Length: 332
Ligand code: NAD
Image 1: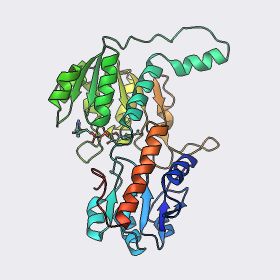
Image 2 (image 1 turned 45 degrees about the vertical axis):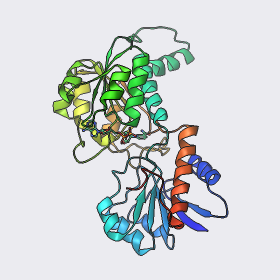
Image 3 (image 1 turned 90 degrees about the vertical axis):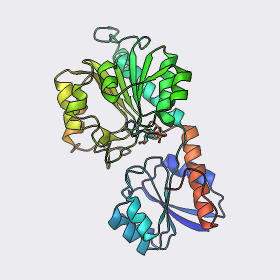
C-alpha cells in the first residue's frame, strides 16, 4: 500500500480519487488544508504528496517534505507555477502533473463566462426571480462578427478559438510558438500581441504563468486594449495586475471583465467564507462592479476533467512506485 497525503481536498476530489485507485494499492490521507511550510509536517512517513493549484511547494516546504521521506510530488493540475522545480530537482523529489485533463472544460467555461456577462444572464436570473421582468440595462452584443483575441494557442486556447469560430467571430491569436497549420485550418489569424489588443472586442487569456508572463496585462497593455473591450481570464490570476484592472474599470475603459482566477485567490477561492468579513480589498472592489463576473477557479470542474485528473494522478503514483516510466508529458 502506498500512503499518499493529499492536500487541499474537497468532497469531489476525494470521490474521484477514491474511485480511480485500486483499494489494495493506495491509501489516501485527505487533508482539507493547503500545503504550506507548516502543514508539510502532516506528510510524515509518506513517499508521495499530492497537491493542487493553491498549495505552495516552495523551497522550505519541499525541504521539509524531503526530510519527512517524500520522493514524489504529484500535482493534480496542469499549471506548476506554485512549485519550485529547481529546489525539487536538487532534493531529488520527482514532480509530475496532469498536463491535459479536459481542455474542453476550461474552454467551455470561458464561453459560459463571456455569454453570461455579455447577455447579463446572472442579473436577469435574479430579476426574474423577484418578478422584475424589465429589460432595462440588459443590452448585450452579438458575438457573431466580433473580433476575439486569443492569447496562447495551446490545448485550451485552440479549443476556445474554435468555439468562437463557431459563433462566426473573427479570431486573432498571439503565441510565441504559433501553430500555423491549425490556424489556417480553422480560419484563425496570428498577429502581434499589441495588434491583438488594439483590434479585439474580446480578449481571452490561455497561457501559463511564468516570470515573463506575470502581469502581462498591466496598466500599459490594458490601456492598449480597445475601449469597451471585454477581458476574460481562466488561466492564472497573476497574469493580470489587479490594481491596473480596477483603475481601467473605474475609468470605464473596459466593457466587462470575467475572471475564473484572481491574483490573490490562495486561501479564498474553494472556501466557503460567506459568514466572514472578506479581508481582500481588491477582490471586494472587483465584486462591486456591475460589469465584472467572477467564478472561483471552477473552469476545470466537470465530470470528465475530475475523472481524468484522478486517473492520471493515480497512474503516475503507481508508476513511480513500480519504477516505471511516467505517462508522456506528466514529468516536470
Ligand atoms: P498549454 O501549455 O497547452 O498552452 C499554453 C500556450 O501558451 C502555449 O502554446 C505557449 O506557447 C503559450 N504561451 C506561452 N507564453 C506565452 C505568451 N507570453 N503569450 C502568449 N502565449 C504564450 O496550456 P493549456 O493546457 O492550454 O493551459 C493554459 C493555462 O490554463 C494553464 O497554464 C493554466 O494556468 C490554465 N488552466 C486553468 C484552469 C482552470 O480551472 N481555470 C484549468 C486548467 C488550466
